[in-house]
Length: 99
Image (cartoon, rainbow, N blue to C red):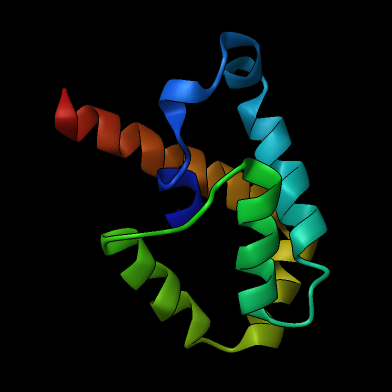
């Protein structure tokens, strides 16, 4: 979520927005091959065009880095579609709260 929230939506064209979940899913799958979560987050940021994660999202990323690397990376690698569904549910819930 920290990577998703750090994306510069103002500079993402409409074609990319239409395919953003597929792009993000591919980035998760690719980045999950890294040996640790720090590498995962760095590769995700590079793939999604994010220069840095800041503010409360940086704190979120730090909490993620404090978890069990192997287990989280295994879940990201093997359950990518489930992770994307959870992300979409979180985004939809935020939209409802802000509506």
